[in-house]
Length: 150
Image (tube, rainbow, N blue to C red; front, side, top):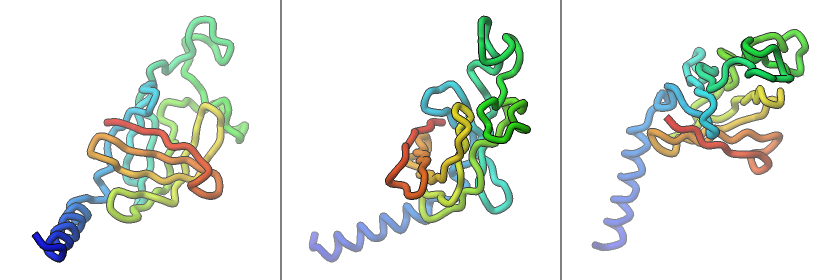
């Protein structure tokens, strides 16, 4: 096979893959990397958002010093004191991502209820069952990537 034919096949394969993917491919429920939470990615207008729909431990355990044992875990690290009584279950932690090409969503934010910080973010759909979520401050080079699974 000559180089031109090989190049054409490669371009057609890339084009077919791009056309086969849809911005909605990200929709659904994802396990976080630690497998202690599930996040549902849903459409919020023309953008993509996500909320916590399951926690391995939705309530404070016996002997907890973080909250009253047996009560729902709260967003106690939120920088806004008025939101610190909001339950973590149902909390929207992914906001306003926009599709930016095949398998890529950008310009959104990710909130980490474990430390109360919000980061700029980008998401990359690696496969139908693997999503890379990168949170960063300023530029994507300075940040951390976590992998979510379906």
